[in-house]
Length: 604
Image (cartoon, one colour):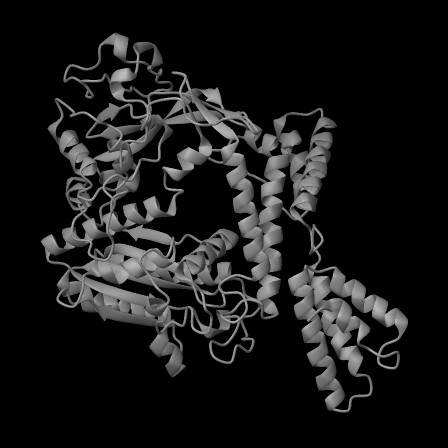
């Protein structure tokens, strides 16, 4: 409903001139989609009150509208644009800096001054931790970019939740996320794409690439991300088959009091004022209890869980568990008990946690979860008919799977919800670092076997060599470590350079240094070899995936992959800083000799 037409439609007897001015002011304070929905809600309330013969039917409608508008007020106006947020962030960062300059005390007093300004505007001040220094916190609070990012987050979430509360997020309005929120997400993506095209990474060897090229060759590319995940879950399935473990597929939902609208009538539920993030926190809280229970009973379950939205944005999970056959029934009971959470409603007891044992003769476990991985990334391999399942994700809305997947990513970005989480499996970090090493590792056969499994895309073998499933991270033989670098980051904190620690030997996997340059409108095409992106993240040797065809040459994501090893000069080798000994890898030898490193190749 158009706001202007709605306000003009009232006669002077229904609402006087000053009342029309007030009504128009209230509606104009909101973003256009929300204002139109509020006008429709105001009309319905007014007609309902008048139909009941109330003496002043406009009063209830106005009170309802006023309460919504008052609740929408925050640090920024409800209809603030990106330019408004940018200008506000600039003013507040300047105010924070001026407040700090008036303090003649130590760093703690300076931090307290900035803390007060940040808190006054409803933001959460940064606090020192293992990776963030006190000086870094001070620099963040006086930085316009930090303010802008924080404001975007709280402003977007606040008004997305308001859109949910008035019925703008469901399968017949805005699937998973409101149209207003989705368009803001698209706008930010386009803005980021322009910035990446105008920003260049320059190597110390002279070669350079635009960040847009780099993003397209890494995990920012949905296709590459999906390929890696499919190869990983397929490797886990093959590992489970070799052990004789069975697979359970669980669909887990939140209680009805956390949903915004009913799935059929689309009428508001009691959870219309509960955020999707709060729904995710409920699921995570129950899962933490389950993990503790499984640890007490020594049940070694491993697999993958996928978080995705119902049509109204409320999260639910699909999880694939592998477990020993003797423990399968107990795992099923534990999952059901904790996610039902004492509910007495028969419908809730039925829908809270549906678990199905996967029969390999009817389909692979990877095939079960493949659909949900694709739905949450890029919609590859799906058509509209294939997505019309019992959970009602797209019922009643003609949504192309690729468009729906984009809306899922927008939903996850808006609410800060992690879509995919592997459980009980080796970390992917060492796998990626091992794939940077292009030559055989001599003198360390265990590390070479691990490197070869990663190089061939054989995640099942990688799991075996990393100790198997359900092993503590500290007990695994390979880790990604970090050494303090000589350079400082944006907030004056020392940068860290990653390296690989495999079977007690350290390996440099990122030997080159890069600088970022902003070149608006310039030529950012790389000036190196014809095909600098010559290694894949997940190869077609990740066998047995019938549901997805994995590309044989999906390129790596790292900047430091661009230069072949034989072209790295001795001068280009980095110095290892901090209290960690790091092997500088030569083109033909990438291991630590039994007698230790020569002094010329070891740095502290």
